[in-house]
Length: 441
Image (cartoon, rainbow, N blue to C red; front, side):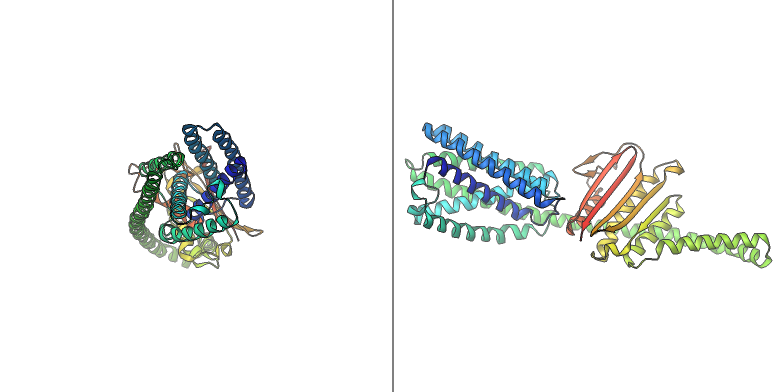
């Protein structure tokens, strides 16, 4: 095998290994539109870069400079890594922080498997090391595939499955930066030690062991860290439930007050009806208008939709907010009722909170729609807002002082949407905040 073919093979293998390991952490996320085309384009881009880097490395090897080999080896591997991360970002509905976590974790997993493979074949089957040009052949390729498959399965069950219980993957940029530094150091150490592997073989083996231990520590720490984050998330959910219960209590108080007022008014209205005449006719028409509107709002075939919309409609009615709804309740039949209630409740709560801060009655309006066409379900909400509204990572930045205790509603919306393989898009332009959610059935 020629040097160019060997270097190209190594970099293509690296690209495939890296894509497989990153995919292990990304598989549960929602896919963007035209996923197949995006995935194919990303794979082609990564392959082209890998082939190009292989040609670069063959040229560097031809020069016989060990220092240049180590430097360009690191550059080539990180170039493939950057393109693979960009490709996955184009394919999946994922924030930049989540992408960083999955990409770094995927590279750590790949580097761990790579180091274990090299150590294993170096110690037991040195004559079948596929990463040595003189040993490339069908038998070494078969051993490579068997070892890699076993190590990949082990890493998946030990590290990926526990982490995948929580798909938030927001470990914080400081922690991710620390893990990235550890990873970079290990990659550099591997590149340098590979140059001098023949001259200082015991040092090379020790370096592999250190790299394996480092990657194991990083992945174990990430698993433990995300367990803590999941627990913190569950605490947030409990707090959110308590907040919702408080809202429900206040809502019940408002309804009780309204019922008291209506009961008091009914005494006078009964007297008017008994008297008859024009005033009685006007009162009857008024009562019919109210009951017709109430029936129109709350009567659908979906219990969760009924509860949310009737609750929010009554709240809007008592707070001078116009809620306009066009709902196909069967469109959300594929979702669990608790998710429907949480999704629509958070969505409408955010709309109500935004328009409640507006003084002009003409702008205290919410438009809410649920529709299905050609197997595509859309949920959309639009409302005016006062002041400025910024977005970060596709989600609105909370205007409240306590940034950590708020903004959970929009994250909950995105989490539910991604749970069912949907996509959510939020925008704030021209004083109108819009949320568009799509599901493919």
